[in-house]
Image (cartoon, rainbow, N blue to C red; front, top):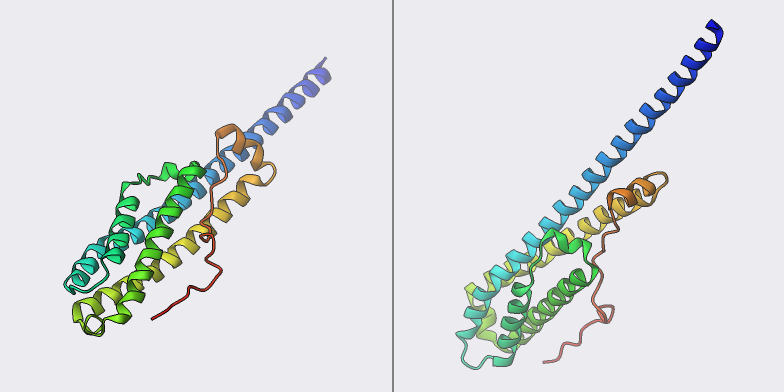
Length: 201
C-alpha cells in the first residue's frame, strides 16, 4: 500500500512541477511580449516626435518664403495643405495595430516630404531668399530634422522586426495568439521613391 502512495505522490509531484514550469515559461513569454510591444511604442513615439518637429518648423519656413512676393504661390499652398493633412490624422499608438491607418499616415508624411522637397528646389530660383539668414537657419534645421526622421524610422523598423520575429517563434506564437499580440507594420518607402527626382531650373 505504501508503495502505491509513493508512486501516486510522485506522479502528482511531477505533474505539479511540470505545471509550475509551464506557467513560469508562460509568464516569462508574456512579459517579453509586453516589453517588446512597449519598445515598438517607444520607437513610434520617437518617430512622432521627429515628425512633430518637422511640422513645427514648416510654418516658420513658409512665413519666411512668403516674404518674397514673386515666390510661387502654388508651392507654398502645397506645403501648407500637406502639413494640414498630416495634422488632421490622429496618430496614437493604436495606429500600429491598424495597417490601413498606418498606411494613411505614411502616405500623408510622404506627401508632406515631397512638398517640402519641391519648396526647397524652387528656392534655387530666388538668390535673395537663398541668402536670407532666417531661411538658411530654417533650411538647416529642416534638413537635420529629415535626417532625424530617417534614423527614427530605421530604429522603429528594427524594433518592429525584433517584436514580429519574437511573436512568430514557437512556442511564443501560441501565447501571442491567445493574448492578442499581432504583427506590427513596417515603414515602407513611398511608391516611386526608388527613382531620383528630376530637378530643373
